[in-house]
Length: 246
Image (cartoon, rainbow, N blue to C red; front, side):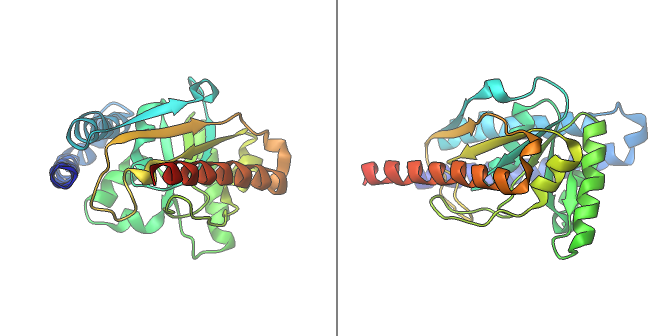
């Protein structure tokens, strides 16, 4: 049954995404005639259909947020989370008012899909550019703050399997120092249900934990220590639950 449901969900996911990408071509051509923010509303609709319809009713997977009181109702924010699944890359369109992700620049080069990402005003980073990448990241941070967006960044830099440790990249600390925004840590177990490159989507409840904000004044060293501790606790929790299932 899980295999069949996964087949149906994957078909739904790719077909829905293809439709949204193709339909988005017309609004991009007419972008000056459309209300500001059309792209974000479009992304929210796409994410809602994927998660609240496809993932929930086809795959049997839903999500639960704990610590939502730490999230902003409006205004700029910096959310720093672990990254386990493709699910993480669009769920925040549904959780915060004006989400913008930090993403690999090469994703913008994907035909059609990259154009839709570009219309969203996301924050691309060229990880091979060294110091120039940080300068570009800080410039984009200024823009996102001015537009009162909530920035989502995954300092591990890529999807990491549940229970696996990965070093944290420094970009998030530079963004916090530049913006003077507190760091809102996020941990999730999404990889248990939608694994990296995994065909099967497992039924159950994805947990998203929003932790107490860390002051921007902590500096890179202390914020990294605290984030690593939170991520380690999340890994340990996953390992405990896996052992119980066992």
